[in-house]
Length: 182
Image 1 (tube, helix red, strand yellow):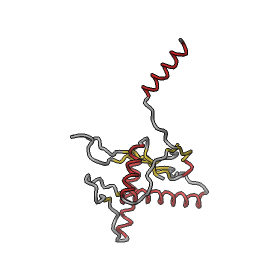
Image 2 (cartoon, helix red, strand yellow):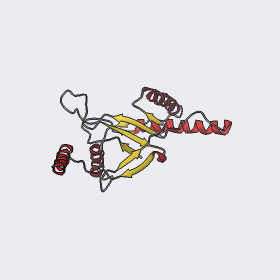
Image 3 (cartoon, helix red, strand yellow):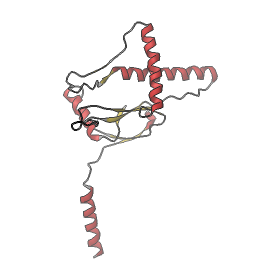
Image 4 (spheres, rainbow, N blue to C red):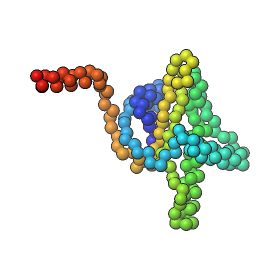
């Protein structure tokens, strides 16, 4: 299951884009309370290095089988050429998870335990869209996405509540307090 980290608007925007392409009928957003557990976090160098090593292993296997590697591609209507169809990235991540799982299973069968751990979740930043303003290094659709692999990491779901104008709320609350005190 995929989640946008703290980004209701981007999640809704994504759902609306899926509706335009006919992939979903009714776009909406729900909230979730997540506990990522053992997370392969691509915002940390060590996990990027792990993924890179599995990519090399995957590339060797594809080459040995004389099979073409998947490629990241653009959507036809994407004017920013973001390569948001991340077929290579996804295949590499799935390959990594499968290889780790196979290694853990082998070790458990051989020794009764494994010192390797299976990832509960994966997290990464995705830079998408055009620059937020001329010359910017900040992009319109940038988001952090979390893939929950172990459903036990999902502690609950909720309907996001409409945000309030905090300053107005404070003024009203303070006004109420003044009336009570007077």
